[in-house]
Length: 250
Image: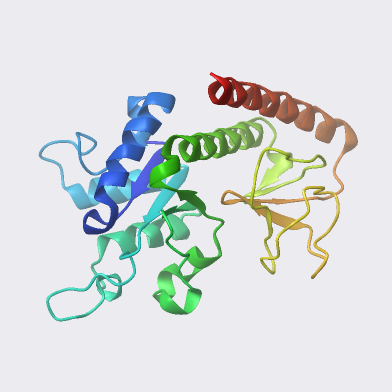
């Protein structure tokens, strides 16, 4: 089994949004490209915990849906569920971190990103992942942005498969502007980045930046190989932009 997008969520926090995202993502990427723990994703009669964690190891993106109660939901003893060593939401995120799976926090409505201090040790890196918001009143436009981000990630992954020289450990070498993506931040200090990504971070000088959970970096690479890879990337991004504009204008 090789599910490409895994949806991580708490049922009592944002179960309805999880189902809505699942339906929309399956329409775009196909029925077999999204994993949600309901609706037939888990094989009948299988050990669901084994299947869940094996699926995470094979996926390339984990979407973490975070609603306003995600961090504070407690058990019958008043202890936060996220502090329970057997909490599946936490264990799924920890598995993705351990196996270097791309993680994109999806903030529902006005939910704020949890601080690193508020998270258990094994999922603290979640706090530094670039998030995207899904709002009730802007659900479909926000979904379009999420889909565009996931498509962009698929482009980078494809280049990584054909030319690993260009992409190593989630760090990509780029030399162009991304005008259609919001919330570009420095991967080192979190400062909002100028969209001219050839310029290092004005605060710390880092060349690494984060876009929708993907970490990239400018570096001097072989001109010919870099030019070919970037040419393919630019063409693919233009295609995504055209499709996105057609949706918005239609």
